[in-house]
Length: 373
Image (cartoon, rainbow, N blue to C red; front, side):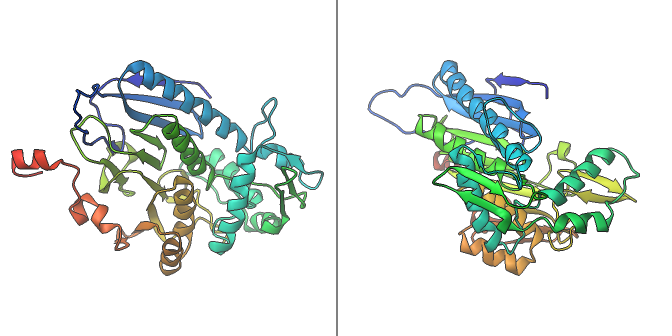
């Protein structure tokens, strides 16, 4: 994939994020904060954008370099298609299915252990051992994307692959640091969780290292840390894409206004191809082996981006009441958009929404001056 980065010092908005915040007064003049932006196009098959506030461009460049190095690391670790010198990754595990355990880095152990728990909690809606089925769908999507005359995979082929998706074939030995698939036909696919997990780990590391005011956006995953530090606003505004509009239009159904939060959306408009005029998207229901068809998008709002990534996939597949119970179990808020455009939100999400809840990012002083938001 071609590498490209762009750094800007600008007032332009970042994709679906409007950058807002407040400042802290001190006895001595505070150093001025400046806003910077950088984009990466070489990880996780998406554009990753970082918007942050630092005192100097050199500070921002240092944190951005650290972010990019971590993105490359997690992208390689969770990659199921490519091998990398000196690293055992998901592809290594899949290549050794039924042969031998593979020693891997601790973050992969950590994520897979969480995935085993999530598979049970989601009633199989999120199952990282679905690789054999998802690979078939991936091949068809790659073959027909951008065309109008695509085909569906034969159900008998999907059913044959589904016989090799048992989560119990995944053996994790934390003490030995190894992962093993006992079924030689099984394979891992972390697409439902990898990007969110990586985003969360990177955001925490950068925050601990002193980068305290930033928004990290990777596709449908947004993680914001503290409020933007230029004093103009009190919170970040994160737009929720209208699934019926083109992604280029920037049309939103609403916006979440909050700090120290993750907003993750799974939608039928993100990756798909067309069959007989019908959109065939990438979120596959393990029970039907076909694209889930209850919703056009599901947005999760909670602190942890990894958890939000998992929940956005699970709740896209599960019936609404089951999904609501799972979200409550994890303290997450949800917006469901059904295929007919009906919008349903959990009660706890409403106060965070700009349109439906009247949430604001305008500082009280600015409201007093203008008399309105």
